[in-house]
Length: 209
Image (cartoon, rainbow, N blue to C red; front, side, top):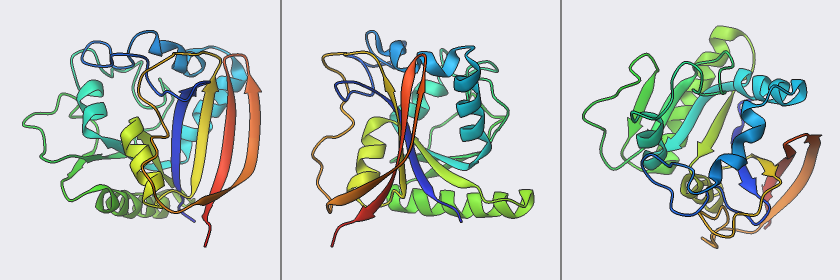
C-alpha cells in the first residue's frame, strides 16, 4: 500500500530551519545542525537514510525548497535526495508557476500549479507506477519545506509522520506546527530509534471524528 509520509528534521523547540532562511542559507542561521544525522558516517544513520530513500516512489516539495535545491548552491551528486544514497524518485513541486529553467535536468520533475492536494495525488500516481515497475510498495514522501508539510497535515493528507529530532535549540526559524488548523489527529507511535545525532520518531495519523 502506498502511504503519504511527511518526513522532516526538526529542532527540540519545533523549528525546521534556523532564523533568516534564504538563498545561500537555505536552512537559516545554524540550521545545518538539523541535518547532521543525514550526513554522518554512523552506520545506523546511514541505514535509516538508505531505507527512507529506498521506499520513496515519489517526493513532494514546495517551490521555495525547490528553488534552494535547484539553485547554484543546491543539490549535487553528493548532496541530493538521500544525501548520496542510491535513489532518484520522481519529484513533484507545488508552485504557482513552473520555473523558466531547471538546473537539475537529470531528475524527473513535475510542477503542479493547482494546489497541494493535486500535487499529492500526482505523486501518488507516480509512486504507484514505480511500485508496479519495482514489484514492491513504494510511498509518497513529503520532504518539505515546513509550510508544505504543515499544509498537508492541516488538510488531512498525511498517513505517517516521521520526525528526526535533532538535539539543538534554534530559538526561532520556520516552525513546523503553525496552528494552521485542520481536524484533530490521533497519533499512534510506531517507532523510536536513537542515533548519535538525532532521535527518529514515526507516528501513524488518524483523523479524530
